[in-house]
Amino acid sequence: MIIAPSLLAADFARFGHDANRADRAGAEWLHLDIMDGHFVPNISFGPQLVRAVRPHFRRVLDVHLMCSKPEPLFQAFVDAGADRLTTHVELGNQVTPLLWKIRSLGRKVGLAINPPTLISQVRPYLDQVDLILVMTVNPGFGGQPFIEECVPKIQQVAAWRRQLGLDFRIEVDGGINDETAAECARAGADTFVAGTSLFRHRNLKLAVQRMRRVAAAAAPKG
Ligand code: DX5
Ligand code: ZN
Image (cartoon, rainbow, N blue to C red; front, top):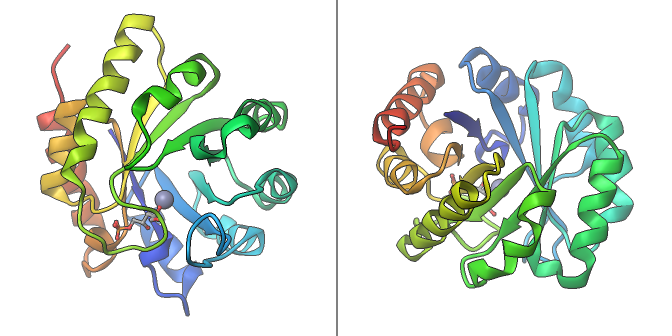
């Protein structure tokens, strides 16, 4: 099980400090939400922020691109230290070249899907990705409530993964806390993005350990 605190929920006046907190808390990944104000109605941060937090987080920087035209940004994020780049299936005929470009830059490839989008949309790409990100809120803001209707989408992607003998990770993102993490783990998720539910704790390490423990306990055995 991988826990990925989302920096969107961090103190915007102290990103390095909170990235270091996540590092000391033992989080395997740090999730960085890049918002362009067009694909989603919000603007967050860009490559410079990734570069700034890189020295403060030793493990994986998981960059989630909520951007309508992400390709011109890929090199800047790679140069800034991003380990994984995730783009959205809602970008339609851009998706195949985008996945290829991320791969050609030597980074792990992720494909995200929004709540209203039919899960069948990701089916053609499953053998081209290292991760499927099932959004459990409509992207753009932290602190939103978990959308239960997304759980069957996790189950479907997990079933395809088994049937096809693939090993991409299944990440969930939005409204994830101990309870919803367990529910998503039962459905087949193995990577958990959480912002509000983690960063609000003074002891981030205990919060990360607890979420990892409940997700592992809930995951199907075998
Ligand atoms: C939303 C982002 C999420 C968000 C999660 O667009 O993709 O990563 O930061 O935040 P919480 O955990 O607060 O719902
Ligand atoms: Zn995200």
